[in-house]
Amino acid sequence: MTTSQEPPDLKLRPHHIMCEPFMVLETFNRGQAFAALADLIKQSLETDSDMVIQVVEGPDDLCRECPLCKDHRCQSPDGDETSVRKWDAIVLQALEASYGDRLTGAQFMARIRKKVPMSLCLTKCKWKAACRGPSTRPG
Ligand code: SF4
Ligand code: SF4
Image (cartoon, rainbow, N blue to C red; front, side):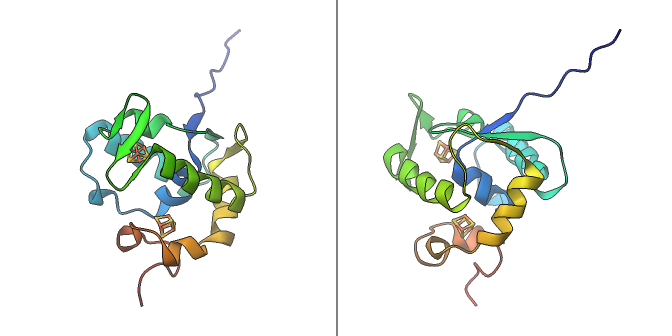
């Protein structure tokens, strides 16, 4: 008897789930592994992929490939781990999710489409210029 092996869940922090589908990946110069994973995340959300995404708190699969993640903390000059977690908490609530939830990319995308743009997209996001989210571009 053959057994099918499920691919492992993607483990992502909330803002990566919400923002990655809209980001212009060329904006980031964080190495090949980061770019490949960012592309996989994008695909899992943009298509009706059955890939399961688990919501995690703190550094996630993408952070692990990011040169700005050090000592298991985001150390980006644009917002350190503490501020990224605050951002994540707002997005988590908007997506009506909890840490540990597991949904397919398609299920998350249905929620994301209802929520973007959020008010923080329009007022606080530093990445707005690189985002193709609905109505997030200055117009
Ligand atoms: S370490 Fe920071 S900048 Fe890098 S992917 Fe994670 S949250 Fe983004
Ligand atoms: S505007 Fe910013 S916060 Fe909103 S979806 Fe785009 S990248 Fe994410």
